[in-house]
Image (cartoon, rainbow, N blue to C red):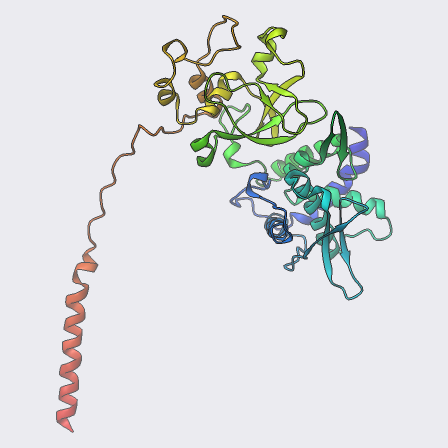
Length: 389
């Protein structure tokens, strides 16, 4: 904490003071750009589209900075770094990305955010040309004041697996602890200034963790985004949960570890679990939160507990088992998830009330007669004028 306060906090405060000049307190939208709004592909065109979204977001939420309207083209020719921002001898800017990270959305978003901030700081007169190391640190912190904090926390630490060996790749110039401190400091500062900080869809009366409900696409096929809780990996991935039996364990595609809900890990016997195991996580308001067996089962059956109960055996219709063959008491999955989410989405067998058609407007009913009267008057006037000649 001392390192953050003494070295990084003054830089972060300076950037925030500059970036949030004339920022609106009642601005709609989300200060923290969610990764779900971005889908970087593998082509330079799709990467450039993602970069455009980053520039637009920074222009909206950091009005005090000079965010260029020109978004540099993407190159895939970087060999000695994860990415770079280059201005050639003809003052033509471009953003480079190492090809090895293409196809890794979490890493790509961090790289593009960092290089975009290089461009923004240069245009804003905040580039530290006299100190390359300090310039990189300032650029890393600028990502947080521009609203890219969640992208940084999610993608700065990467684990690459080569057979049985796993190598960690750290993106950026600050530690994971520094990134978390910068993230927390920026949100606290915006709250203190009365500026929008947290996602509105993450707000809940009474506080506590909030798990976002799955999107309609997820609700249709049971596909959700989960996080690996293994200490070295901690990667996000999308998976379609099993609907037959228990939806756990879920195998992480990055490290191969089998992931279980928190209550299953605490209560199940070791013989009932895979040897290589870790806790399954979900994102909650920009942070990773534990997921229970009831919540995971509910995500695997997104059409609602009633519809799911009609297809399950009578002995299992009330809730999922806490762990295979443990004989423990069952949990009301729908009730637990309702408590987590705050509300249960409308099910398919609960149709909305029919909408009555709006009555025709009185003005619309008289419009044609009035036009006809005006036309007759025009014709009469024209006839009088012609006869007078």
